[in-house]
Length: 177
Length: 434
Image (cartoon, each protein chain N blue to C red):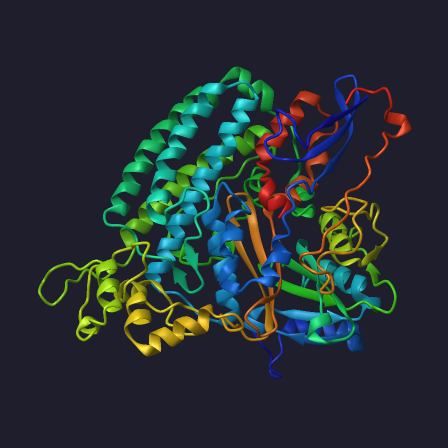
């Protein structure tokens, strides 16, 4: 499904809407992919959900990639996979947050409730912050864990110190556990 | 009152913690904490070769490990753009559906047991044993199967295995029917699970639900129908859906899916292209291991001319079986053992795939592959930098999204219903925490 320029019609539609905000597109092995600037990332997700030509109403997956060893900048890339029930098609939306300092992008939880845990996991594993997330804390690791294990500069055999026993919060003292 | 359930709790199969706030017996709020079984699957995948991650995938959903194997292999194959043979596709369908049945059986068995019904648990475990026996015969293991390979499978089906599958399905169905009679119209069971743990289709869809839990709300979403992969478009099967999205519907959907899976397997057995049934020059069937032994001693002069009956031994696949099962991609598929031992090209090919710094090297790129696992959409997102190791592998476990919505399903209900709802969601901690 491509038009005269060899481009998928959906990409054309996104270009019309977002113009220069689209950094890159490709369709490696048939997986339609769009990279947008972090400023328009949330808008692009909203457009993909609400536009009748797209109607990507299902967030299938959200994750990130640390591109440190690919020697590409910016370092991090947030990758979201959408599925459209109506069109029975998929699209991959990516954005590369500015990684000078702490990388941060807009949270998609207001558009897709399914993004809640995956965003927490990405924060946990990569240290990317999601602005507007209602409860952004570690998901798989414990709070005292230092560092972000899926970053490429985190050694695979690194050990973490034993942690102190946590005190029972005041409001739970004397309660049945 | 706050009640803490888990991570180690008699009624929690799997390590997970639910912190509930109660008003009397009513759940006012719930907070689900996961991560107790985190084993760094994704990080480990980055430090081993593409083909070495199969044992890790076994341990994702350990009740249906074969489906994880298939999904992972399909992901790497998509990166490499190679396609296994038709016979291999059929084998993958058959093992996936067997796994789906074992998964559903385990779910219903555990769920019924937690509600006090011990008999269905025993019946279903007995039924599962028939299928685990088949898996064991095929792969050499009950749980840590590692049967699928990039571009194919480890070995061909044992002689007479397909007939035994049909017999096992018959025996299984008898047990499942027994459970059906025990539970489906059982007043106590229905009272415990009907109209409990409800979720609307819109909510389920927004939360990323897939699989039987989504279908129980009335949405006929099944990747095997919507985005057919392998050879699923060649089979005639139905996608059962529920109406209320409650625990009872989830139970009914799973019961029916087991029948549909059996239907798919029976059709696949009828359609599967035959493996080469040939004999050696003197008319005797020669086993793969004998072939390998001969090759080790350098007696390879006429080996390449001979064709033998496929023999799925642990020593390795013989050439004919390898041809009928595996994709013909030198960069990804190990050569038949008789070639490895018997000629220099085979040996070099083998080394290139095994040696450190070599291995399967997919081109630079990224793919996402989705399979309909027993719990829903099992996805793999893979990034390759062109080297022999994965740059990034991410797994989308189906029950991750189900657990994300668990609090919505239990808040407002009774504390005792948490167990029922948790049971029908079928959380598998191995794939949840990875």
